[in-house]
Length: 507
Image (tube, rainbow, N blue to C red):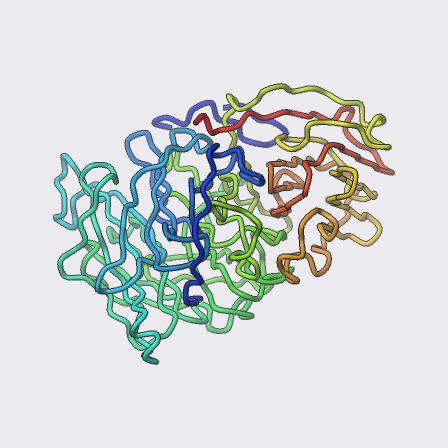
């Protein structure tokens, strides 16, 4: 494992809502993964619609990524679980569709675990089952005006996630009469020797317990009067992290749509305590995982090597997700990020360390910052750019071609970080895509902070202060960006490190 300005570069980590579908035909392309706007080092489906990551679990040297998938269109429709696997969280193999809709409903978001102790009896201790826990969404019930049309079901696999059997007595959690009752995240809680399930119930989270993944008991609820409530809560996660000072805390993350700090979909998180039954926090402020527009429904891996907490998000926003200008696929995932918990003046906050296999590096070079003040030509379309900034001063970072420009500004005078994608390329597919600036306040201390920017064909991810502040955004320039410009009126790093990256697709 190597660090690039606080970023994780993994060579290998071994053992290490709803709307009615708007159907349109899938366009075929004779050169897969070379289409305009096709991400080259982010996961995207070969064709068709994708949204939330589901069932993130590490098993037998492989990271499994299941995801919300509609194979018959590039817009949302009857939900399946798509499936992909990876050994390094960078290169991905497409696998057969894992779960299909059935008489109980569409297969909405959820999670997966390895039942190592065979508590469910669905496998054996020698061959423990991979168990998926997911939401059934009954469209007939929704259209009929019922409030109990979402329930929780399970399925299991005995061959590493390649084939699945649904549990014969689904659902395992009935709906108590709550319209939005979904997205279960399950994990084993060692102190209580129980499985814990957290789901969302409209405007709050609910926690359930089980000895066997089948029989569930309601334990507690959280969030009726805490956090942001500008939209429906979705895709919760609950996990423990220990700071570098040795303090263990529990983190509850919850996606919300709409109600994000810069419009539309976003993810908030709470830092507190969990005793096996109840999550509690004295947190007063709202903490956001990402200040950009395009990181939603992110959840973390169960059983990740070294007890790392690795998050993967859907790189889109429900404000415009169904109309972005891509074909024959729509949507991608963010870079995987290792989460760490930091504390400063009794304030706990998450930092995100992007994960990238070092084998993806094609060429890396150092650039004198003085040469970037007027902009220089560089192959920025598929790159990582690293530099440092003085947080008390002004810095402007720009990617541009002859007619289009993406701008990120750090304003020490006002204590603001600002993303401007209003002139970044195609934006007229939705008036919600770039209605204004994305902004976050910060404390403009006089110190240097590391910045890393990952530029793919149709996305830009910015990690500031070693991942304390993150902006994830899609961009759709009509021609690739060809120039990089950085201007700063304060101290900066001696060099900017510019790294060209290869494609993960080899077909």
